[in-house]
Image (cartoon, rainbow, N blue to C red):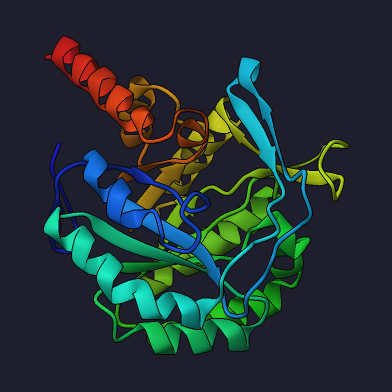
Length: 282
């Protein structure tokens, strides 16, 4: 299922979402699984150890998990040293490269965007919706609006990663801004919930239970007239869901929790299931 994204032909719309390969050490191997795109990160400006363990709880019966990683990162400058080599490996296999950045201020985002603009990546994802932020980007709409205005100069594709659990007025507002400024959307981040077994007492729910929310939000964005790229992300555990999200308006479909349960074997299974779905429909 080859697809053209921003003038680049990639072999299929399936890829890895942010959260698995936070510092890019797995990228040279993951790009060999046959995926069409990879999202590396989220990378933070300063090194972070993240939250204390336990910070991941899996619910195998629900095909879901809760994580409160706390945005661990070796830091942006450490990442830049290795980025050219990562892109080179991805390019050999025609994989579209997205770098997810997480910033705690406008200044942090602008600094990272200014430095990364000269690298041969395809796109940047702005993670403004991590539960680690405790909602800071989402509660100060003016500050977030200033960020979205100030990054318009960036010469490569930009994706804004939306949260789950926000009110409909917020979604209409941010979808409208992204549409006007030509940004793509990643729909969506995890759903914040309480979980007493996590060290900090809360985390983000991912996996199959959030799939209906992700699908509905993608469909809403298209009904509101959003015309740019959408990465559908959240709860994709089976091949049929890839076609389902694309029918509802996604251009690319990312996987995280399935990889968390199965590792790279998840992609092989999804490719087989997708092939069967496509074959049956034809």
